[in-house]
Image 1: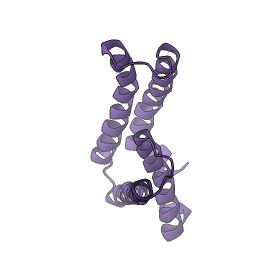
Image 2: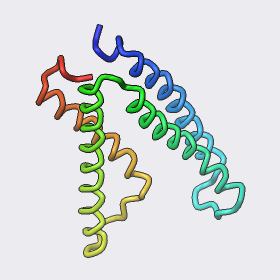
Image 3: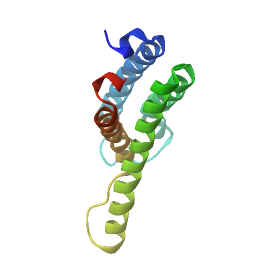
Length: 139
């Protein structure tokens, strides 16, 4: 049994993230089905397009709540380090790509991709934690 499976904060976090993730995937699928490509922005299309964003806001709330509920200071430090690495990762890629867009004709990176880049950065942060602390130190 890992540290994460024994810690109630991790169980609550997982219990929040799974339904939010399912809601997000379902809402994106529904929006993709209901809104045709190139649709005009009107009240209906904007409202439908914003629904997946509510789940994304839920993810952010769940992560913040997780940090508040995590009572082990060492594990909280590891999670915060993951968040910081993810933030630096996403900012580095989007900043460099933005400069490429500004000065060359590379394709534009849709702003939507900032969140997935941040999530990839969480995995990078997890690897950094694992590398520096060993498997036993990783949550």
